Image 1 (cartoon, helix red, strand yellow):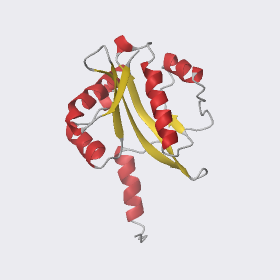
Image 2 (image 1 turned 90 degrees about the horizontal axis):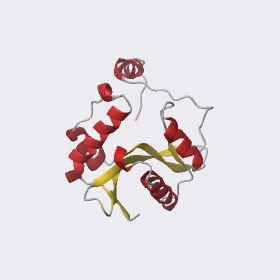
Image 3 (image 1 turned 180 degrees about the vertical axis):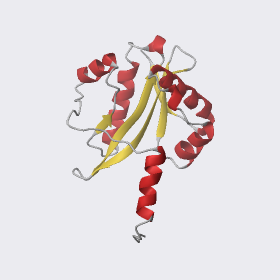
Image 4 (image 1 turned 135 degrees about the horizontal axis):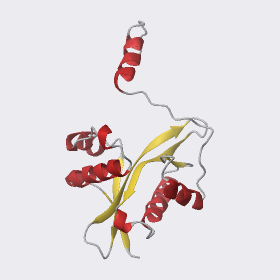
Amino acid sequence: MGIRISKATKKDVNKVLAYIKELASYENLSKTLQVTEELLIEHVFEKEHATVIFIYDDDVDEEIGFAIYYYTFSTFLGKSNLFLEDMYIKEEARGKGYGKQILAYLAMHALRRGCDRFEWNCLNWIKPSIAFYKKLGAVPLNDWVQFRLDGDELKQLADDFAGEGVKYD
């Protein structure tokens, strides 16, 4: 299998958005989509908050999958970690090793950047992906519960801070 992995550029924004929409549909999350080409241009390509890569098969004239990742920081390790936000392989290309190639590429990239960890989340109902990750040696972090603040709750917490007269630089 001849493959190529390349970093997306601003001119690829429509392809990135198309993959995000496919992923949202696959994960039954289309109703939650708020992303636009303008937001991707600003936050991915201009502010560089994340990086998008595409995977290509040499025999196919277009990308067959994508991944988006960024760096976090471990206070206990004192180092950065690579965090895979999303990965998606087109349905007709699944089971051919492309997902493993993307993960191997990101693992190599993480090590080159001095990261000691490579982490990601997976919806608990996507059993084939969970089995695949475990086969690679990845360990689910069952001791941790992920939390999220968004919408009105996020705004309320920010307002609560601003209302307490705390000074900050």
